[in-house]
Length: 296
Image (cartoon, rainbow, N blue to C red):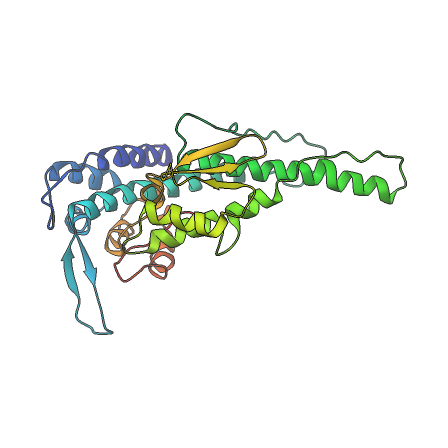
């Protein structure tokens, strides 16, 4: 009843929010304010505060009590709107997964069970971007788990128990995983770092990737194709197009917009964003936004 209606309202609000349009370049205003009204009605939020937060940001600097409203550029407003969509959708997805897990949890049951793992396949297309990078990284991690439990751990157990056993040779992908996820120097760390830069760009990112990993056996970059880099995965070598990596990884939800969201009277939205103001604001930059969705 009530919960299902609220879930559907949240999804409808996300779809409507994507239709909000702006006009102007250095200082924007909302073209279709009626759409914002629909979004706010669905999410039970004050439309005035949301419209203000979609087009400007509050700035407090130098430790002063004085605050300023700084207009957003068209690019910043679009990015902020999209970040609001992504954040609400992500919070709803996490909420639903938590609720499903809670309802499926076995309590007081110690018998045998069967678990099924359903994963997306390894992806390589004519053009590969951040989506394929994330999917293939997940597959690398799953392959590592398989190697660990089916080869390393099993063979070690056989050796410890003195069971006659001929070692099975397998491809170890730990170095490839390190290339992707290593702290500070891995590809994900470099992506997150570049996303925080005021003038960060895909061009700078791929240049840093090359400088850091040109000696790796699992990474390739050719100056003749300056927008491509290749990772030699366990399953296949994949060339990724760097164009759009930074934009897809950014999350610039303003603190003002987050503050407007948590004023909602909707029970579901309150639950989804519980504690979000403190968590998000602690990670917010001077620009009033947080950058970098993939983090290591």
